[in-house]
Length: 200
Image 1: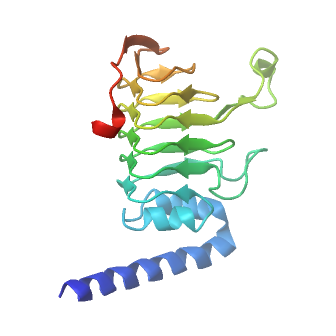
Image 2: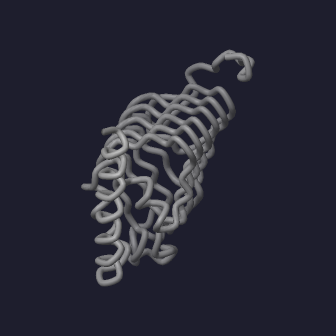
C-alpha cells in the first residue's frame, strides 16, 4: 500500500510538472511563477529546480511561494536561477522572492511566513529617480539564521550565520554572525552566545 501511494504521488507530480512545462513554452516563466503561488507543496522544489533554482536536500516548503521579476526586469534572467536554497531550510507560507539579483539562503535557515526578499528598488524613468536611482544587490542569509514573520530583507543585505530577524523587521543593512535584529530599520538588540555547533 505504501509503495502504491509513492507511485501515485510521483505520477501525479510528474503529470503536473509536464503540464506546467508545456504551458510555460507558450506563456513563459511568468506562467510558472503564477503556478508556484497555487501549486501543492510537494511540487514546489521540483518546479523550482526545473526552472534553474538550486534547491538543497530536505528543504521544507509550505504553500503559496511568490516570485516576481523572473522576467520583465532589465536584469531578469528569464528563469529562477537567482534562487539558491541550502540543505534543511524551511520556507514558510507566502514567502516572496524578487529576482533581479540573487537570493542565497545557506543551510538550515528558517524563513517564516510572509517574509519578502527584495533584491532591487526602481521607481522607473520618473522624476523621483533623480533622488532614488535604481539599486539592486544580492541577498545572503547565513547558515542557521531565522527570519521572523513578515520581515522584509532589502537589496545588498548579508546576514552572518545564526542571525535572528524579528517579526515585521525591515532589514536595510548587513549584520555579523549571531546578531539578533528587530525594528524598522532593523538594529541589533542582542548578540547570541556562541555555542559549539558540532555538539549542539
